[in-house]
Length: 106
Length: 120
Image (cartoon, rainbow over all chains, first blue to last red; front, side, top):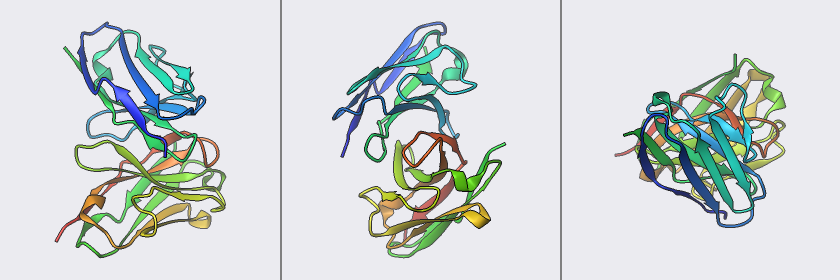
């Protein structure tokens, strides 16, 4: 089974800050990596697919990069509405989510 | 507009069974894979099971294999999850999610979930 780790588990940043989350797979997953946003009490929402592709309608301040085992998710300028937990997900071999990174405003 | 509406959750005793349903609308249901993902209270996301458009590919998480069965009825635009031998650790909000492309693809739409509580 492929295991996913994320860091940090939580972070606090100011509005306008650049926020970076990393995700690591236990084995090479090529670019079969997605990022989801889950706001409190809501269903997850797909933001980035195939490591770096922005889902339609998602603001351009969100971006993703990486391949193989190491991936990065970035919010270029944190906005109040970005308060959420962010999950990476591999789909190279079945589907595994990372443990999540909770983002809030300082 | 894509809509996924789950139902069938509730309080059930350990060892009993429950059947979840997901009613889909707003897209051509039989063109896409579908999945169940769960989230225990205060915890992260766990993929439970997935099924391809024609039921030719089906997968389960190890934690539910042999106890849960996924199925779909394309004529009724519906996805199902039969859950048997339920355990306390199956307590979670169960989401229905649509595959973006084929069976192995991102989940681009999610329902709001149905809560399953396993307790005596």
